[in-house]
Image (cartoon, rainbow, N blue to C red; front, side, top):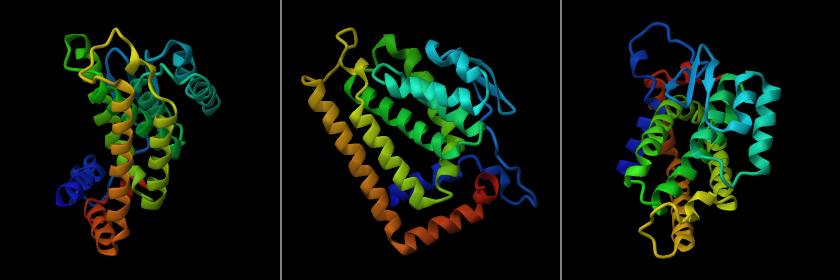
Length: 233
């Protein structure tokens, strides 16, 4: 459990280390990142979005109504929506103040990528850009969304469970494409195993935080790095 605890603390404090020892900390209100050629945002406003043609223009409009239209398009036909698209939606949601939506779509994107990466052989040369792009989104978006998500541990648990269920209920169709190599003899069975592992990991996290001492230690660690001051409303 020690390794699990360390990973949790790293995720929650990753973007806060520079705040230690400062009298005043900067509130993180936007996800300003650059991931070429997919997405760039500065001061909470998109500079370009090239992740999914049906919604790129909607995400560029930088308003809640357009974001919700983009989300509706995804929800109506989720089968081939890439993890990078879901994490871009998460970044846009955070910038527009829909931070709980950002948590959901970040974890949905993360888990969709994990299911893909554990069924498909992403070490194949054809996935070089895919792997690096997803790694960038996971780190850069996660460095903001994760610290916010744990502002309310109980809410985080609920949202993450919903995200795992969403990935289970909407399997990524690319996983079953014959164009993509896989080490799995039965892709459906392997996908089921991956989903079960995601659910088991989430249960371990719930059990960890059910221990009052673990929860208190975690909250103290966030206080040490002034995480709540930077990320919580």
